[in-house]
Image (cartoon, rainbow, N blue to C red):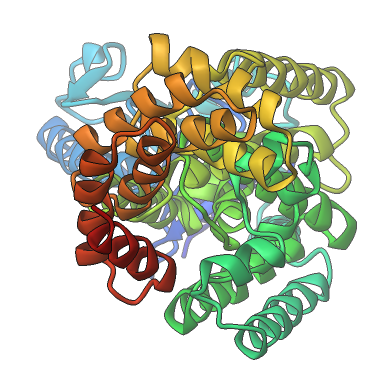
Length: 510
């Protein structure tokens, strides 16, 4: 390699070193001949990809073909980085310009689909002068040694590669903030709680789940707000436990490594609470599971993507987004999946991650805005989603709350809850039955009779309603009609001794 070649190879690596060390570019690819280098700067939107080529240009047609190939490769990079548009600065370092080159070849940018390429030529001694005056490169030191030897080239190349290695090491540290501990702790807790459920009636038994803290709207309305937390550690069936444990193992360890132990605990718990709250506000089903907290881990990873978009999409971003979308689609199409809890957990994880941020990334204004936004959003949802007006509750919640009041012998409170729903809401047979039961306890037999008849009209096979109506009809002297309902109750449930006794008594009486 002659002295002239060495000067321009030195300039090639000096430009690369400036971009890596001072402009924070990251090396994407270096050709085997080490005369072509692709670099990326995730911090910059404009000109975030730079390609440097060391070649003595001869013909303009070669430049045109090279730019076309570069545009194709640029599109591949754009898609892999998940960017809507890509801008490439294409630098040629040459001894001379192309013999037949049109000066406009290095003036006008060219576009290919969503990739724009700006070709720039630095050639000869004029190239060094242009570097000094170019807006993008002007802050660099571009004086070349009067005599360049191979040792100079090797030195500047090693400086560049060392700076690049430091960048890569720093990037890897984003994923290794510490060793997971609480991920394994939460896994242990949910496994222990599953065993406790199985030993006390079964993890699929509704009463056992309610007893140990599953999300149950009626009791939460009654004031058991600790149920926002306890469902996170309960699971319904072995398959549910295995799936969530596996998901927590992979996602939890990743998030705990990125955010650190204390931040992970905050993110996990707030996500779980947000998932339970969303489920409480938008669904009436009995539910439990760590799914909301696990989706919160997805949300935390999305926030990581906001802070480090290029690192995110280059490593895991596309896969994370695809898994989230797949789970949400499955949640909307497969019955029995608590999608409200999933979405609530996802949003909760994103917001919680924004509040605590990443280690060594202190953004006080942004973190305060995330905190205030989270409080405001939660307040609005609670205010819109629940109130003291029972007509705004779903019918299952109304019936559940009424059942709790009746169990506590709060007859008047049960009537106050059920009456507005019967008059203005969308009652079902259970609603009419609970209202009639509370009315019977207050000796309001006339309205109780009407509501029992309404319950039977809604559900002809409601044996309890037939039995209670038969008792009221006996008191009013309508024994023949009472006999018909007692008979119906007995036919529907012959195992109930009270039904059998009443039926046979009325059957014997004239």
